[in-house]
Amino acid sequence: MERIPILRMGQFLIVSIQVDMHDRLALTLQSDLATRISETGARGVLLDISSLEIVDSFIGRMISNIAGTSRVLDAETVVVGIQPAVAITLVELGLSLPGVRTALNVEKGMAMLRHATGFDGHDAAPGSTPLSESSDDSAAV
Amino acid sequence: MTVLRCEIVPVRSQQDVVAVRQSVRSLAVAQGLSLVDQTKVVTAASELARNTLDHGGGGTARLEAVIDNGRTGLRLTFEDRGPGIKDVDLALTDGFTTGNGLGLGLGGAKRLSNEFDLWSRAGEGTRVTITRWR
Image (cartoon, rainbow over all chains, first blue to last red; front, top):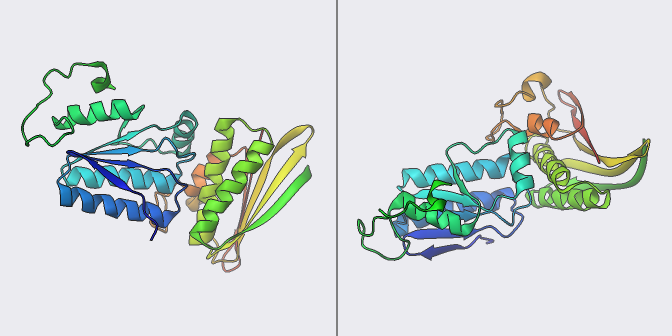
């Protein structure tokens, strides 16, 4: 069965959507991610959609659902790489992805996740490495 | 309005919806639409193709490259012989859904298009035509 790969990096899960998804594939990703968060205890999800040429209401709903489900499972989600034309279209469509954190690129998204969770992304013991020095640029995006 | 090119594609599966998006993209590029306008018309096509599949039980998409008084554009017609839409005004209202979506499909597709025409009759089917000019 066709699947979108979910990579683990320390406390975080990373997903990069590189295909034009049909609806079932989007639903599969949603449930796969929930399962992986639960199995790994991941604290953050980075969702890279820079290769997506459109986000329609179905994919928009998938993104909102992923963010919502992750939150319930105690993980933060950051969506990165939304193309400008996609952003313009999304808003005109009526979708502004409320409650979904976004960052311009993977680097800023990772910084945001580290800041939001207090983890540095590596296999640190829970509770360690709080980013008290995180007054850098990207945390405020 | 003159039709320069016409392509009729089936909308019978989720893969067909993806194929419609790709065909509309190529047509939009060929017609010289800007990237933002390409994105808008492909997104509108995706919403309408999904409606044809999910609510109409499948149908066809007619994708046309058109020219009118020197303006070039795309005209897309989605047609099914499904149950039809009982209340067209209600169906166009944001947030109204009979399925499990966000209820943005039809209204969103209208906002993303320059021209929008909806015909539907209970028990006969639905036909939605949108036009996006360059």
